[in-house]
Image: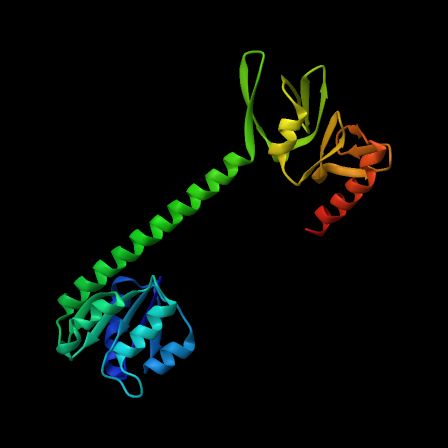
Length: 242
């Protein structure tokens, strides 16, 4: 967690930093003595304690410019100027602490801010994991063979071939047969696969060598139709460039 303190009074900076580190010793504390210094640093802390009455550019204008680039930072004003409390809502302030304040007041606001940060952080992690699961599901499919459903990861397929309406998928560990169309598998497989022959679909990841008649893979080989050879070479070169 990263917490920034922007205040032109060194004594206030030190006091706030001390209170934060007392409860959250692993926190990375960033100190700024003016709004100009904060904005030029181009940082996005998790929590920002910001004074209003500062030289050059006041805290409210600093907050407006800061918020334009940093939507998720939890912003807390720490100031002796009560009259700006309603303007604080315009920049999405989480809280407004009026000086002088007690340690108990600051600790309470800090605790609530950290809980808010942790809640947001947990939600971001959940969404990231959820999106990852959705992507992974798109990289696998189920086939039924002999009354049993089997999950196959596209990345595990070395090559596939079709004969008499039966598709055989070859992985490094096993062969799996099911009734289906190779063209359906080709559409699902994506750019990492190439249809070298009407009866063969190869995963470019496992190609070892090739010529105009055959593609040798890490396990097995596939036929190459002469009319597909140049397209295959172009696709394979582009794949390797990735």
